[in-house]
Length: 189
Image (cartoon, rainbow, N blue to C red; front, side, top):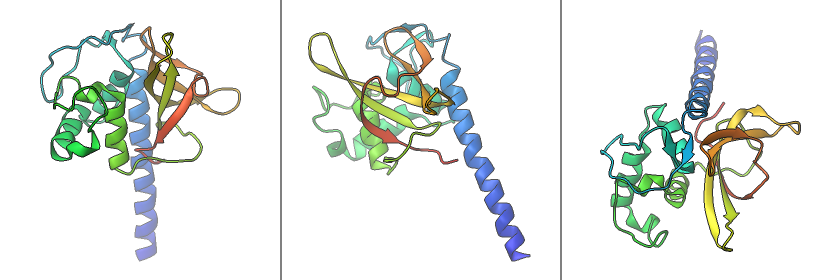
């Protein structure tokens, strides 16, 4: 009887985690064709659960909105974490000031938060994984970029990426197009 209960629990917990990944991916994919522009403007938004209009955003908004589909508010979590542990975020941007309007919309802040939670991985890319890249800008500077691995794959078996890079949310074969600098797995299958 005890073994039967353990097996049932394992089956149930596997279903629960895979449902989380599916919901996370669906929440990111739901932005494709809806978030139509790339718009990095600073805006005052409500706190918690604040957002700019869904028709616009940047790469981080794809990630933030995907987590919101899971009832996880990165705006509140990053703001509270930065308030409690400011050294995790010190020096990442031109100001270390707390700002619930923008802190969760910055790649390095999301990256620091995910690192602090132990989500960094160093293996193959799986659906629902979060990837951080460094891009080369036309002016020679580096830009941070972030996206989510899709459950759809390219001809080489690697996941497509759901992200926003200059023209709205898209699902594209770009995993290896840019220099990968970090990789996170929040949800297990």
